[in-house]
Length: 116
Image 1: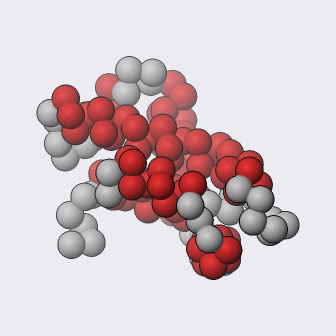
Image 2 (image 1 turned 90 degrees about the vertical axis):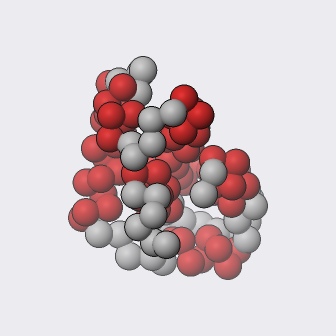
């Protein structure tokens, strides 16, 4: 998916979507991948490390990856706040309610043909 599609998905979550996301199992692998990405994102402002790992290397692919990366980073660091801003009536008891979605974004970005 493109960055604009991910953004639209996140900003238009229904109650059902949120219920699905907060009840998805979070594996240790997901947590490790998301936190590794967060560490790289915070310590590599030029995104050089991330760009080296991407399957595509054109400038437009890199811009798209950077936009998706920013959305994923925001979800990893502020997923709870993103959901609370939408005022959909959920009291969240999980620490990282959208971590599986961030993992899906990273998987889609680094392995774009894995699910096709």
